[in-house]
Amino acid sequence: MATEQIAVRLPTQQLKVLDDLVDRGVYESRAAAVRAGIEAVVELDRRRRDDRSIVEGYRRTPPTDAERAAAIASMRNAIAEEPW
Image 1 (cartoon, rainbow, N blue to C red):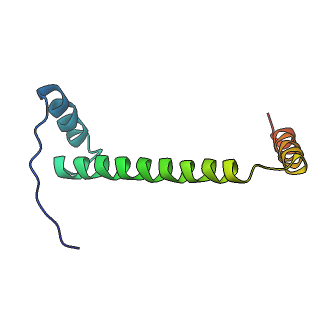
Image 2 (image 1 turned 90 degrees about the vertical axis):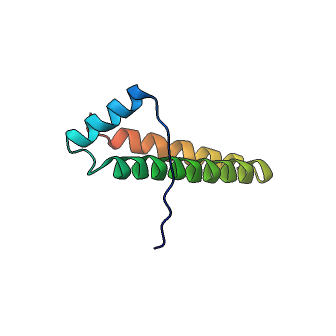
Image 3 (image 1 turned 120 degrees about the horizontal axis):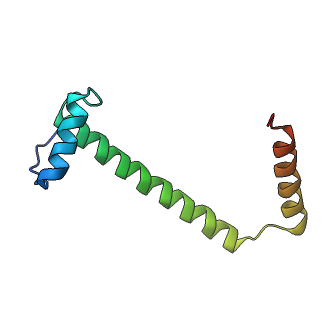
C-alpha cells in the first residue's frame, strides 16, 4: 500500500499523553498511535453513515405493527434468557 507522510502539530499536553501511550507499550510509536486514531475516526464515520442509512430506510418504509410487536417480543425473550 502506498503511503504519504503528513505533518501534524499537537498541543504539548496531547503529545505528552501520546508519548505516555508509546512508553507504556500501548502503541509501537507515535505514528502507530496517530494511525490508530485516524482508523478509529474513519470507522466511527462509517458507522454513523450506516446508522443514518438504516434510519432513512425505516423512515421510507416504517415497520408494521406486526413487525414492531415481533421485535419487542424478541427483545423480551433475549432479556429473559440472560443469566442475571
